[in-house]
Image (cartoon, rainbow, N blue to C red):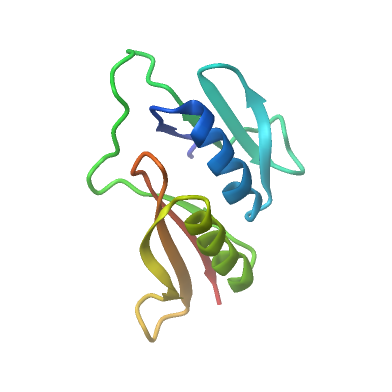
Length: 126
């Protein structure tokens, strides 16, 4: 149903550095790059880009959506924890520590804000 997801950035170079290390924790790798856009795909399917970071085409300031969130499925709880840890070390902001949601549930989540304020989640089913 969903072809790919795209978030805006006001600093493509900083976003590039941030996502190269953060997205790598989820087995995604850079598959495309130019001066305005970067695309990431699964290591096993580089031609199928799933996530883009881009400077807005209308040349206006990129902004995040209130209530908008991008969520990445992780293979396991360790990868969710690593995603959160690496994102914070790379300059992201905590939006929710790794843990079960709800507390007695069976899905494990972690939330961050990227350098532009986009809300990004990693999760796995336990």
